[in-house]
Image (cartoon, rainbow, N blue to C red; front, side, top):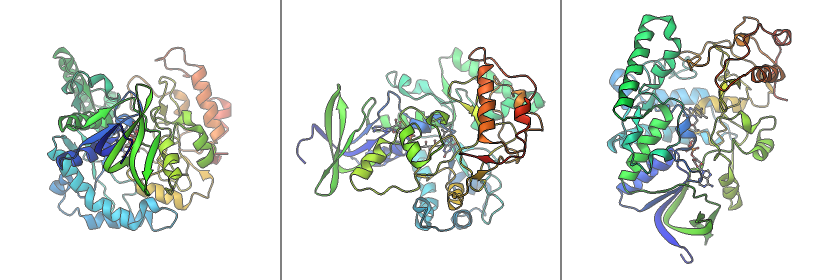
Amino acid sequence: MAGFDETFDWVVVGSGAGSMSSALVMRKAGKSVVILEKTKFVGGTTAKSGGVMWIPNNRFIRAAEPDESAEKAIAYLDAVCGDSPDTPGTSRDKRRAYVNEAPKMLDFIIEQGIEMERTAEYWPDYYDELPGGCKTSRCVTAKYFNTKELRPLWQPRLRPGFLPFPAKLDEGMRTAFKNKSWKLKALYAKIAVKFVLGRLTGKSYTAAGAALQGRMLEAALRAGTDIRVESPVSELVVEDGKVTGVVTEKGDKPWRIGARLGVLVNAGGFAQNQAMRDKYMPGTRAEWSNTPEGDTGEMHRELERIGGVLAQMDQMVGYQTTRSPSFATDYVKPPGQSLTGRPGARSSTSAMPRITRWPAAGSARRASQRTSSKAAISSRPIRSRGWPFRSVPTPRCYAPPSIAGTALSTRAWMRISAAARANTTSGSAIPFMGPTPRWAASTRRRTMRWT
Ligand SMILES: Cc1cc2nc3c(=O)[nH]c(=O)nc-3n(C[C@H](O)[C@H](O)[C@H](O)COP(=O)(O)OP(=O)(O)OC[C@H]3O[C@@H](n4cnc5c(N)ncnc54)[C@H](O)[C@@H]3O)c2cc1C
């Protein structure tokens, strides 16, 4: 391997959770590892996410429900996904590999000091009515994390998440309904007291995806991983048909790093790349996405350049929303409505071309029917979820039964969204408290189309 400025055993592009776990595995085996992250933050979309991992047959569910098994989970995935040459990301072999290996992965990261727990008692499978479906919870999340446990240099480099509180994800979400019962009021008070005490004692908590990434970052650094931010990888170096290194930057100059064992490309999706959206998912917008700025897909192009084959680039997972008036980058869904798992539904949050985690099954089902341009807003209530932020009361325009549970045209949603934005008076103000406008009401029972 000639011409490299430095060499590691294992080179990782991107700093999502998979990058950190691979670094931990390699460091345990005594190999040198570098993680190269393009942005100034570590954590990627993973840090902004709920951090909820669907891991069937994991140690927590097995302890609570002895009848849980890998076979049940495989039956579930088989029932949801089926087999199609169109969906190699969820092939039968991959599904089996995932179900068999994911619980081992969980055990491994727990052994490395990452504290994990069952997400909630009830966080059911998306299609829990199908064979092998789980009506309780196969999901796990990291325990909330005190970011002050990171070395001072790294504290500001952890990408912020959406739940900066000492709470479990489902607890944090439930507090939105604190006015509904004394039990929820007590939960809210417990979290508030913990938060204030934490602040007074110099702690800074975060939960959900940022907690996962905070814990992973801490463990990866402790294990001796070299992690570099603002180090975009622009090229994979190929010699004799093998990837032997990458080209990144150091001090604004190209910097070539060799890889003795291999390069892991874990660089997210392309939700923020409008040109790629136009090519693979026409009719969708980068600005709709909740993914961070680094989700721009150049590694997909690079992999394609060196002969890689891309698949399922026209799929993503998300839900139909309109823009939240109070958050610059957040989108909200009407309360009590979701657009999960409806055949043919296109959705609008995170682009996930390599569907491996969330919910692989649902995506495959949609994929099999994606020729349909029709989608409908589900009137099925969001189970344990709902309006998540106390500071954002439900805009009344979403509430009337004239809209709830009916299908609207995309154009109508855009108009609602635009009207909501136009009525925003400040960053945190709650706009659009008037009655449902006639044009919105008149869109009842229309079928939503993306184009
Ligand atoms: C709001 C939200 C909530 C979600 N909740 C969940 C959930 O609860 N459960 C679930 O399973 N999924 C969830 N998802 C989806 C999930 O978060 C993502 O699919 C997952 O985090 C992607 O992980 P990744 O490691 O592939 O990419 P990322 O976590 O995005 O990491 C990729 C990193 O690579 C970097 N990168 C990109 N290009 C380069 C380059 N050229 N050089 C160097 N670095 C580069 C990026 O900057 C980024 O930091 C959610 C998504 C969103 C947006």
